[in-house]
Image 1 (cartoon, rainbow, N blue to C red):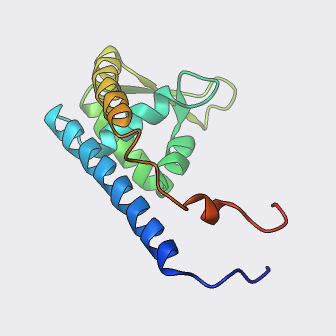
Image 2: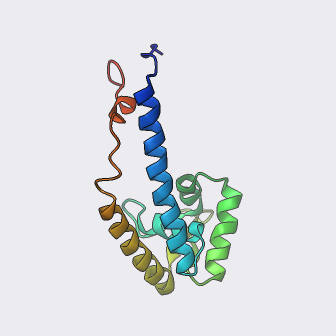
Length: 144
């Protein structure tokens, strides 16, 4: 690993601003989910099922990865979503050990409502959520 240039005050300011704007959006998301009668994690489960690339379902393992949580935690979360009528679970088609999680009509309705709110919030933040100098943290010397 190559050494990088020393951090300057502007670097700390850029990181601080980025984290601040990110936290503001996450707070909006948490409040929106709770206003709709869901927990923020319920919303994320629904979003990751619907938004998983190339399929209209997700395995518990895929959800665990997307949520950055342990498998058993994802199982418990999916169980709570199932109890709330937001998702259904079925054995995998090719591998019966896998559990495929799909949205119910209620889950789809809740997700669409919240996703619309989130899209509008992101649009309203489009000029605010641009952080000066943050690209310096994404660029690596020599390309990687």
